[in-house]
Length: 280
Ligand SMILES: [Zn+2]
Image 1 (cartoon, rainbow, N blue to C red):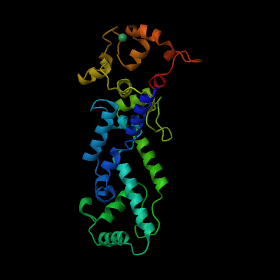
Image 2 (image 1 turned 60 degrees about the vertical axis):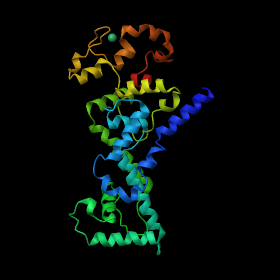
Image 3 (image 1 turned 30 degrees about the vertical axis):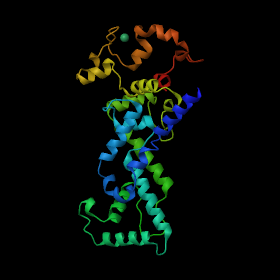
Image 4 (image 1 turned 45 degrees about the vertical axis):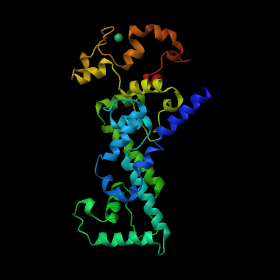
């Protein structure tokens, strides 16, 4: 890889970790976001996903869970929850008469006097924070000196996110099957290596489109026309389904390419790589 290629790859790696975007979307979130964390998809979360789709070069309709897994990101509310927990821990650790800590204790006192039946947005900040931390499985007494164990909370949020793939849509399940080899785990949940390893954007985008099902083969176009999966044949060879597996492994249209790039299809000891390994 040349120097320019390395620079580009570096920029992509950095972008993939959303180093620029996450701080912008989360600025001051420990103050204003607690009420939003439990609210479901917010405008901020839509911006996060839009950015990640743009980074990958995939369609707007690419499922959120697929986009997050490709880039190794958590949903925005998980980052906000961690930010809230860190902020609270810092305030707790301050002790003494520091103004920020006193303000938190005031908010706790106010929360104790507030009707808990009110909508969350109308409750004091301390009540919102308590609700968020409890929902994240890390209930916390804000008046104590020691609060949330951050590494454990981070791990729990990651585990919870990964578990959400079990109930994902058929399209996301197929992505996990084809790209992750069948299951997704917290240990392996990192940005896809091709984001750093493939220096040219147009190649990266093409790969991302194939991996996420954001391509123009009949498997996808037939979905838009609401055709049954059994009625999305390959326009080149009439095989019953034109999908990535068919294009990579079977379609005679690409036989010449398979011969030309034989090393991609025949790794030592393995006659034929799995689709997950090929797309990896
Ligand atoms: Zn074909």
